[in-house]
Image 1 (cartoon, rainbow, N blue to C red):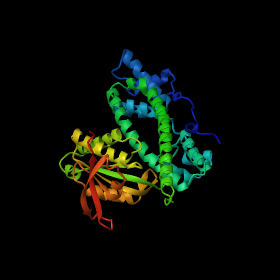
Image 2: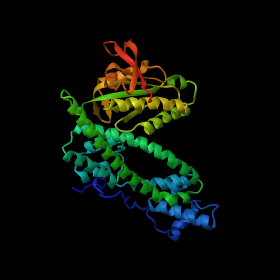
Image 3: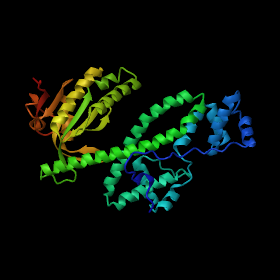
Image 4: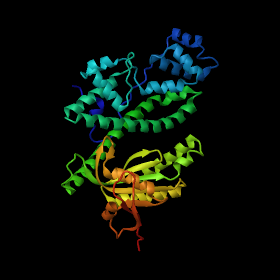
Amino acid sequence: MRNPRWFTPRPGRLVSPPPRPLRRSWPQPVQLHDFERAGLLDGLSGSDRTARVGVLNTLAGEGVSIEELRTASYENQLAHLLLEHALAPKSNRSIDEISQMTGVTVEDVRRWFRAIGRGVSEDGKYYTDADADLVRGLEQYRELGLDESGMFAAARALGRNISTVADSAGAILQERLEAARDHPELALRYAVEVRRMVDFQAQILGHILAANLRHQLRSDAVGIAGDSNLHMRGAQEVGVCFADLVGFTLLGERVAPGDLGRVAERLDRLATEIVQPPVRLVKSIGDAVMLVSPNSAALADTALDLVQAARTEGLPPLRAGIAWGTAVPSGGDWFGRPVNMASRVVSVAPSHEVVVTGDFYDELDTGEFWGETLGRHRLKGIGAPQELFEIGRRSVA
């Protein structure tokens, strides 16, 4: 079986592969006449006309019809159309053909595409040879003997996060597209570079994934070695922290949805900037972030830093709740009693404070952190009342 490109190792250094070029074939007179007759060159002369012919010819070479070109030109979308074709080869495969090419059943192809966030279509030739490589990746995983349910759960987590990355990158690209709206010939200059950027980002993703997997395996080994009673696969003793913005729901009643979203994005950015291994940013959930670490001191430091940074940034008051116990990673998320406990603790934490359970406080070095009891609290869904502590760092003399 042929190895898909993204499984082929590139030892030694990070090198971007040659991008897939946009096909270029200079127009025959009849094609140029078609452009003129369709009104695609109206009002243009000299170098502007020549540049626009280059754009139109590039798109025509990609199989875009005159009618599609006319519609895109009328809607000032030629730059968008150009970059769309730079990012994706022409679709020429049906889902049945992908199944025949790879030896994977049609149903498994559908399941895999849904898991990784690739659209599933039964209508026509929607797919490419690159999609076949994605499906061969499924067979590669199976040949490694990986658990099927865990494999699909990991793919779903990857798909969700890739969508988030694409949203962020798309916002940046949109700025360039707006600048090129009236001058699509500018988009032609960097269309190939956009494809090169995608290939390069794919390699970066591979390196980041490998680094995080190494860190996770080390964490699993430490957790399992530290407690012989942890028999569940991947289970380990960790601290779990939820930090949320106080009054975020009420804020939503007073500001526009876009402004509310920007507040949540600022929290996500702060968390991304502050969190460092051995602490992990697991996810953002609207007005909250979830952190996990096998190192209690590192997690406490991070939570305190995050609360202070939110105050400095002028965000709504942030508070954090932390619990300690056995948790299990699955599909990019974490499950177990400390997850549930931390989500309850944060709901009773005062603004600008970090509140922890007794189990977590017992893990801290009291020479480095101080703790003040807040008494015993009944938490929703937790049987016995829990003693909680507000914590902070001791001053260094």
